[in-house]
Length: 458
Image 1: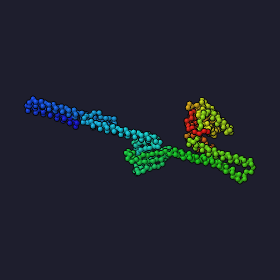
Image 2 (image 1 turned 45 degrees about the vertical axis):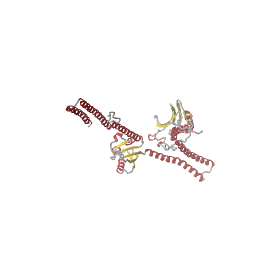
Image 3 (image 1 turned 45 degrees about the horizontal axis):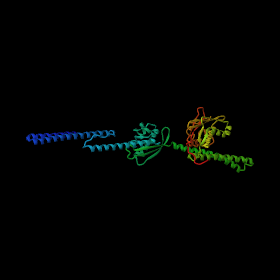
Image 4 (image 1 turned 30 degrees about the vertical axis):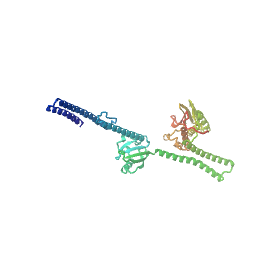
């Protein structure tokens, strides 16, 4: 169209010039008249040329705008128009302003999408976006792990193909057919029989996203519930035994079964022994509660872990002699750390007590102190049966007792206290089976104290 107008404008100017010259020739006008005619023709020619140039520059600007629009539509958002003419200056300016605004909107949309995906991927719960035909539109990393399929393989397929679970599929379809409110259910999912809480939330005006399926793994909830049951079982057992003993002793005294003073003293000694056993259990519970809540008082000082290990071995010497067990303490390199000495004594004592408990008669408990640069490691190895594979990840849990330890005394608090005291110092605790047999417990303490210092004196 612009090209036609350009040609027509130029032709019109040329025709006007020719007409002016023709009129002059026919009229045979005088020289002055001829001068006017020539000037008119020249003006017409100049006007035609100006019209040609004007229309030609406008055509270039319109072509540039058209080309830029095509590039914008193809996703080249940085495209702008640099060609303009007097008649298209405002049009080019507004086009470039519109293109900048479109680029800002697209960039903002992309940023929001990136943030949304980051939030989804950071979530520990599995989340799956599903279309109205149950096709998976998006899923986060946790969902891919739960379903056991790569993300790219799940997107675009139906939920039943990826999840292979009819309960989840039925839950989603129920919400798609009745999108008035969320729906939830607890399902047993996969070969591992994992218990999941599934929540299907309808998404109104969500485009391709009709339902958001959220899967909560209840494994940790079950574990905590098992901890609670272990606590009730172990503590009940630990309290029931001394209480039954005390009751039997008291009833014997009440029934007049104790006549002599020596016999009465023995009964009272046994009663005191059982009371002390229950008191020790209650104190351990209170201590663990204080340590876990951060209420424990820590007074760091320069401590030799080799000296601490030898002191603990000395305190347990009488018990070792009765079981014919030897404690061997050795160290290599610098063994000094900045730590709370009473806490370290308790940590090493609990580890030695645990090792003695599972060591056969005549065995040796090995204690090694190792310099590991910024850390100092204390490893306690016994010569017992070792730790069952299913118990390795739980030995430091409070109240947990493996099959091998159920017949032993204690509520399962010693190793939990070890873990939390070491953590209060910024260290770590781990358990493993030694290659040569037996179990090895290793705690690592930072050389410089990094825990919370007590603000009060001892």
